[in-house]
Structure formats: structure tokens, C-alpha cells
Image (cartoon, rainbow over all chains, first blue to last red; front, side):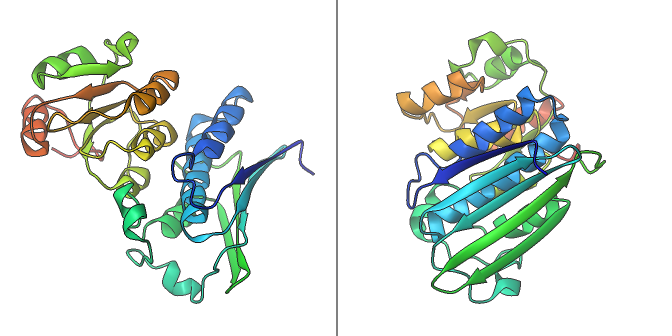
Length: 144
Length: 117
């Protein structure tokens, strides 16, 4: 049962505002006194996810649930979907466009970096319908 | 090394974050790839980059980067400088190239993100 739940919208192709939701989440967790190491991991996962939605997704949203012992981050979009998830999870594999690369992204590091930073990670996707990424962070985790 | 010394060493101009001149910064990473900064041990580092997009600033906020140095005299737009100012991210512009900026910092004891020399 979440103690606090917040939802932020992510707008398709809005490269200028991408990342604002994750910064709001970071500030929220800071205000709640969550450990900095955990905040950093949540913020990185949220941000990588936001950039993915802006790039590949349709519109999407990022939902953060703060529970007594954990934080859940759900990133969902109604975009193009991922045909081959294991391939998309491979470091260095990317389908990013030139515009995305100009912003310093598209190195094929996003999903692997999200998996690395979260304590639990699940992804499901349907081509033509969208993608859901669910990540969990234990508040007692010693992961740096 | 403190931020003020880094600015002097790089002959830089401070564009945002003047209140952080005494901030201690001991490691640095140089990249135009924000993915590398997000995947690395970039907390409280000096980020050297030629990329002046708004996502450079957002990456710094998210990853907890200590200061951004734009190389080859690049400066971001006023709108982007404002976002950095609001979020407490110091911005420096240096006339030196990425290579020379790295060399100057390394020669004075600044390490890589993982602490290597």
C-alpha cells in the first residue's frame, strides 16, 4: 500500500521538457528525507525512462509510489513498442534518431542502466500499443 | 581543488552558480554522451562537455554533477543558464579544447570518475 503516489505526464517529442518529471520526483524524495544514494538511483531510472518515452513512446506517464519500505517507479507509454526486448536490453543497441543523439542520448545505454540502478526491474511491451517499465527500490538497499 | 581554482586553471568564465566558488571538486569526466555520465560515478564531478543542450543540465541535476565546464568557448542559451541557476548547478565556459581542459585538470591531481589517475 503506497503512502504517497504521484503521477506525471510525459509528452511525445517534447525534448526541451524531458527530465522535468524526474527532477520533481528527486525533489519530492529529498523533501521526504530518503537517502541520497537511493534518490540518485530512482532519479536516473526515471530520467532514462522519460527520455525513452519522449523518443520512442507516444504520450506517457511516470508514476512514483512511495511505500514504507520501498519506492516503485512505473513508466508507461502508448508508443511504438519494442519488438525484441532482449535486443533492446543489450548495451550499445539503439534505434535512436539523430535528434536524440544530438542531446547526448541514443548510445544504447538507457534500459541496461535502468536495470543496473533498480533493485527490481520488469519490462513488457506490445508493438503498436506501448511499453511498461516497472522498477522497485528497497529503502534498506545498500546498493550504491 | 575548489571551483574557484578550477575556473582560474581553465581561464574560464562563470555563467551560473557564483555562490558555489568554494565547492570542493576532486574528480572529472569528459563526454558529450549524457548516457555515459548517467551510467558513471558522476556524483560531485566536474563534467567537461561541448554539448550545451538543456539535457546536459538535466543530466547534471539528476546525476548530482558538481559543476559543468563547456569547452571551446561554448555557452548555452540564457534559458538554459537560468535552469542551471535555479537548480544550483555551476556553469563554466572555458576557451580551451576538451583535450587541453582535461590535461590541465589531470596535471593538478583531478582524477577520473572512478578515482583513477
